[in-house]
Length: 275
Image 1 (cartoon, rainbow, N blue to C red):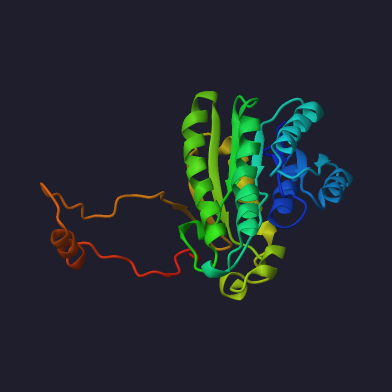
Image 2 (cartoon, rainbow, N blue to C red):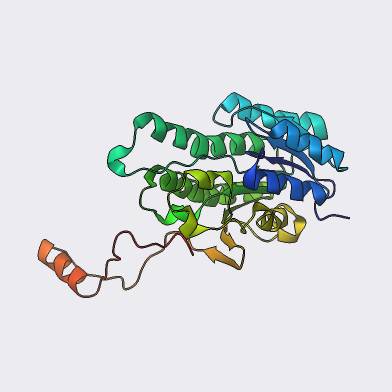
């Protein structure tokens, strides 16, 4: 018996890397899986079936709203229900602000933000109970040389909180995971060797996603969860930093004095996304 027996789950971006690990682990725990990716999905689905699992492939891009709806329809037609969605599909982009190009910026947002939202809204129309797991990144806290990627993951953190509140009435849980593993995306990351290493394999990240898809996590929703091979913790969303200063009115000199004394700005470029 697996913790996902009888559940039908969609995993986007599952043709390789983390998505493939999530799909394989879910299938090994009894889930019926729709493997989505523009490349690699058929072979991953076939190997799951060869291992005794149940899987079908979908090769559309989540950046296309019609394809996002189609992947949900495929899950319904193949397995009769949608119990889980893992919004893993995404692309990375690293550049200094003065080097960013509009077409690349647009593609990052279309895949990482709109792709997630297209799949999530399509699934929300049919899900009554179950779990949506969005994939974010420690870069959502802000990473130098990755403004578009950081912005896209920060947006999905906010989407996660919004969906968790909206879908609670339908008994659908929504959480986000920020994993750290060595994947093919690391090939484009100039800081890859500072962040991860080849021994941090995607399969080590999969148990958290399976847990969140399962009934074991029935009381867990609206959480941003950071997962490293040796660390597991929850990240708070934007919060008030104390002290909160109250005055009847503020002028420029008073604001300057506040920042010189009570309010301590954090220096830019602080590497907060790695931990």
